[in-house]
Structures are given as C-alpha cells and as structure tokens.
Length: 428
Image (cartoon, rainbow, N blue to C red):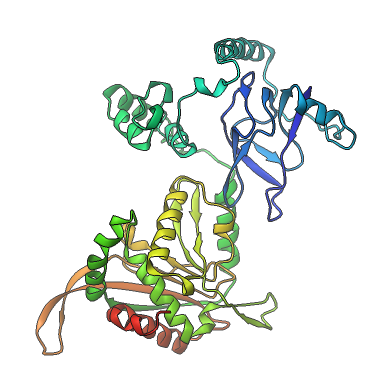
C-alpha cells in the first residue's frame, strides 16, 4: 500500500519549514524510526523519521524548498501489518486525504527516468541486505552525517575508528586533511563565494532573526558599560578546571558568570521580568532562565539554561557545553529556545570589547561580554600591577528599567565576579 507521510504540526504555530536534507533517496528502503529528512523552522532543526518500514517512493519537496504543515512530505510503500492498519476505518491514507496540488517540484521525464535507473541500482544493491537495509550505510550519528555534508565528504570513503566501525567526528577531520579531499573542499567553497549581484529570500532562522530584531528596535533601550576585574575569577576557574575535566565537563567563564547573575537577580528581581504588550502590567518571573547568544551557520540563536538559581556550577557547565555543541550542529531543541528571561552575548569570543546588544524581547535586559584583557591598573597601595579585565555592556528596556537600577544591579553582579568567594554565602 502507498501512504503519504503528512508533515505534522511541529509546534509553536509553525505552518511551514525549509527542507534542509533528504537522508533517504527515492527508491530506497527505509525502516521504522530511521531518519528520512531534516527540516528547519524559523527556530530549530527537526529530524523527520519514518513511521513504517517500507520503500520510499517519492519526495514531494526538493532540498531548499518550503514545505507546509498538513501537506505530504514523501510517499512510502508499506506491506504487512502497517498496510492493514491503514486499511482499517478511521485511519488516514493517501486516498482519504484531501487532494493536494502537486508541488512545483516535478522533474522532467528524462531526469525522472535517470533517477529511476539510479534508484533501481541502489535498490538492487540493498536487496542483498534482506531484512537489514541499513547495514549497507556507514555507521555514524546524525551529527557526524551533517558534518560530512557540510564538508562535502562521502562517508563511504571514510574509515571509522569507533565501535563496529562507527565513523566519528575525528575520523572526518582526519580524512579531510587528505590532499584530494582538501582540493575538493576548496573547489566547493569557491563555488559558494560568488554571491555578488544575487538576491536571496530570507528563510528559516535568518527570517525569524530579522523579525525579532525589528520587534526589539521598537522598545526604548539604553546601554550601560562597566569594567570588571576577573583576575580572581580566573584563578577560581583554574582551580576547578581539572576537577571538571575529570568528569568530562568543560568549565569556561560562562557558567561562573551565569551563577553570579542569578545571585544578583535575587536582589534585583526587576531584571527578571517582562511587561505586557500594552505596557500596563509587569510580571516578575519565578525561574531565572539565562539565554546565551550563539552564532550558528544558520543565523543567531539564543538557547537558554533553565532554572539557573537551582543549579550547581557543575550542572550549569554541563548544560552550557551541551547547548553550545547542539547550536554548532544546528540541533537545538524547541524547548531549549523557549522561556528565556535574560540573555548573555559573548562578543569577546570573536575579539570584541564593547557593544550595544539588542534586547531579546520580551526580556528586559541583555549583557554583552567583551574579551578578557590583561592591562595595567593601580592597586590599593598605588602600585601598578597587571590585572585581567573585561568590559560588559548592558542594554535595558527603558520602559521598566532606569540607569540607576541598572548600575546598582551591575555593581552587585560585579561584586560576585571580582570576589567569587562571596558567592559561597548565597549558594543553596
């Protein structure tokens, strides 16, 4: 039986998404729960898996096209119990669905014939795998497959060093150093550099970012800049780093910054609030969910660490590492992008010092961290000594925050960062 897979409601009122990648070609066998395609909404990347075991017959959308929720994504041919279930009354089948116009993706007859020949060849190769068609594919995680696509590498040519020959990220990077592969990668990169004179439609995350920035610009905002001495904070990090590394956790300054921020917000709850659309009510939020702006290949995303006030430093570091890796791979979950209450942007990672960060509305404050600089400063005895300094740039919603409140809050946060031992008195 032929069944159309209907693109489901991904959540948050999403009605369309971009088809990023097909993992299964037309004519290939597919097993239940096998990744079939990747689609990208204006916030996250979503992996679409197969509902049944069978044979994928047709793609209704091409890579880069915008697929709509409620319309067929692909057609699959199934047999046995799955087909019987769809024949029962009340079950949706392609015949029972409203007739949907075919997307403008139909290939010319010559292309279709060529594709059919390729599909038959692939199918004949896979037939030897009998009940396990996936064994013909290289063993690799979705993240590694995505990286391979970005690097223009063929996984069949890469020797895996993991268990049972699983291909790891390190295997890809090692393979990429081969001269032939480097040449191919450079050629592919040069083909994408010539964009002069071209007009492209903003899609997915880029479109969402543009709308969000336009919305934020309507909020009256002011900026407050302060210099913070992080010499002692870096010493604390150096002392804790080996202990964290033994547990496989990377400890950067970000978790320490977040914990100090949560402690300061306890004394200044207005920094963890939001106002309604009419600006007639203010709501003070219970949880402190700190967002961290991340530049990804698809655009700017701001995942957040939930309930920082209740987390240990180790738990915060674990989540920061996990969110950073997911952002780089374009695999942030929808849940990680929701519910942020205040944000941090680490411009220092790119070499910046001072900025005017744009609010992540409806949040009322955001801070940009500059890079750490070792500079001469006078100590209490009037002697010049080297200190590790960082510039922080706060932007606040001037409808609910004023300069005095922001300055007082920043001094409180600064106190925890410059004398990290004082945080012990507030930790629960």
